[in-house]
Image (cartoon, rainbow, N blue to C red; front, side, top):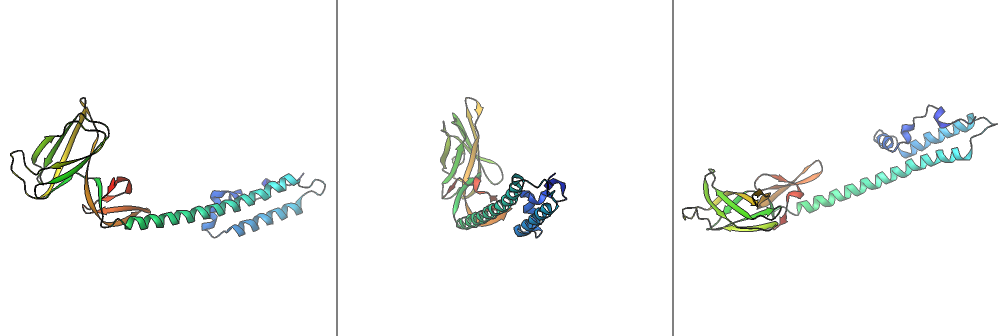
Length: 225
């Protein structure tokens, strides 16, 4: 009977793509794996029964295995190179935003000379929208209705006057939005422009550090101003 590869003590895990990746980290290169395979194959050929030698299909199958491992190792190297190149490009683009204003989720409303601008993003159309402005102490300064709004972003302006008609001092305020559609609450995200002061990396992903001290992933940035 022809000697099969399963009858030896050869570790099949060395021909497994996952194991091959692990072997690479411990110093076993593709060439070393091929040498082991050829040694095994030579041993098989020497030990086979001359009256019943290994058929061509078995040999072809075993040769195909080592070729597959070598090919996968080349693919893994190419993918790794592409990933590193993409990360480098992403890092370069991220640093280009330093010093720029970006629009991101934020409830801050900055009043300057009687004018403050805020942005609200509605998940779906709203039939009624109420905006409430509070000061640094949390006290309500003003509250006003904006009427029906469509789905998407809406920019509003506050004149800086309180409910009593007195113009408030310049500075930072907060705003809250309550939106409904036929009595059902509508998701409304408050947004405001902030300045990107630096870029940090967390697990290889760029995080934009804004003037408020928050770290924002690129998915949280709605617009570059």
